Length: 101
Image 1 (cartoon, helix red, strand yellow):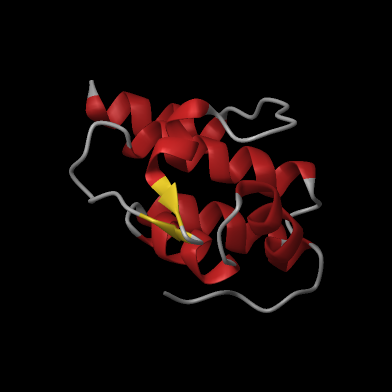
Image 2: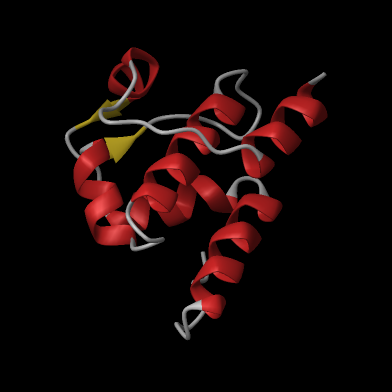
């Protein structure tokens, strides 16, 4: 079930106008607290990718909307390599360099 949730988090986008209560419970002081094995990880990855898609895959405004730093977005997506690949593919399509964790 975990792998399915992670796959859906990477592949399915929704529109968001504000961080979810789950996100707000995990983000404090510009930092995000979650481990690679936590059950909330797929939902948090989906939220980051939704924010990035809504902001043209630009990390700075997506991070600002979520109340964290862009480096926190990279660190979170690096916990599930396909998520970071998704962001890097979108960046490459726009002629931007890939991000590394």
